[in-house]
Image (tube, rainbow, N blue to C red; front, side, top):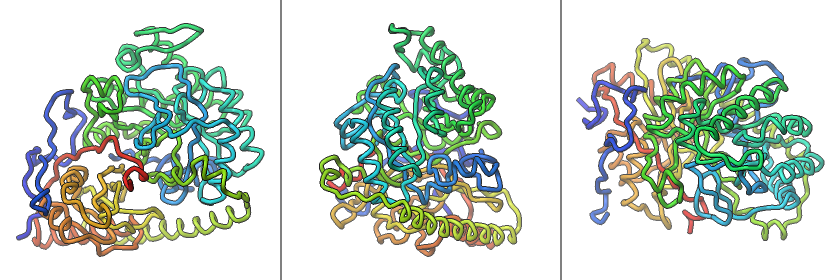
Length: 531
């Protein structure tokens, strides 16, 4: 009899980490130790009107706002692109997890950009990108500081872009301190998507995250600073809800600081009308130079993050497909094409903004999207024909986009993670990994880190995979699967799951629970990886 996975050091009777099992700072993590490669040298929270929702789950006017917004619709993020422009360098608060960099090309995280732009440069860049990437539907201003701490630059950019590219949706991200004073201006420019970073609703918790704020012409510290920030965030959220602006709340999960507290944050933002809640892992590698990174504050494991997200089920709807983008990101979520659109390259381009071409391309995208949805429904119907059980697994998927299994294992820089059961297949997150193929050859030393990143998954679906990584994954109890190459993701995941259930039912293999996985931090941009 074949075993589905080897024994691990994690508790064998528990499939996933629960909220009560979240480990405190300094506790050991249940992550597999690095092993040699082949070379000898070497959560539920399904949105009823949110990220996973469709046209049947929300009013038509809301669907029109989110249907092609990759951050507000999980389905849309497979097909539509976004971009950020770096016109807002100043910030009015300090976060212990943030270190802004203005000339950084090799880190993929919030708060870093390769180059600051003027509003005029930003608008030219947006029009250029939209001409070259017709599925780019959203322009966001997310830093590298705070968009509303730089109101003139932010709103000048939006004003000029509205005149030149009226079909592009406008977004901004803010810490919320200046938000109540600028709600009228936000509505004036038809900015109907606003993200607010809210990490606490208790000033005592906030004092551990924010050393200071700059408010009313003075620097304020401690609990008083956190109290003012909290009050302004709640007021701003309520004002946006009253004006019909969709709001997404970003929260950084910091183990031992606000992990269990984020459940209360979720409740409070739901009360005030938040459309989505995005709970993100802390990025805390020391080389980024943040306070938390330099003092040893660790980020959560994959299952710790999922445990908090799952504990928020029934509260504000959850976004689980966030990529914690750079402040100058360009492309689909999970890819960065910003190096194709540097200022010197844009200056050499002849730009023709063809609105009809953009609409025609997006109509084809919608046809593909409907085909994906129909394939998912057919696969779910097939799953329901099998005996009902409580089996629920995680599956990693290699994809270039388009909602299909269409990426070679060796070219993956992130896996998309799906939770699958007989009732549904649900996107629950992504895992960044080190690039395995380097210069056309597999780098066996990278394999252990890839395995650790998807260690809680029972299978990985790819378009192709070489013999060495196939053997390494199999030895770790992760089934490499290339039989669904080119298929829509949900159809492929459900197809593999039904086959897995059949093998378990027949006695061909024994189902075993998986361990935890490691969230990859400090990932490099695509350009740096290529270099």
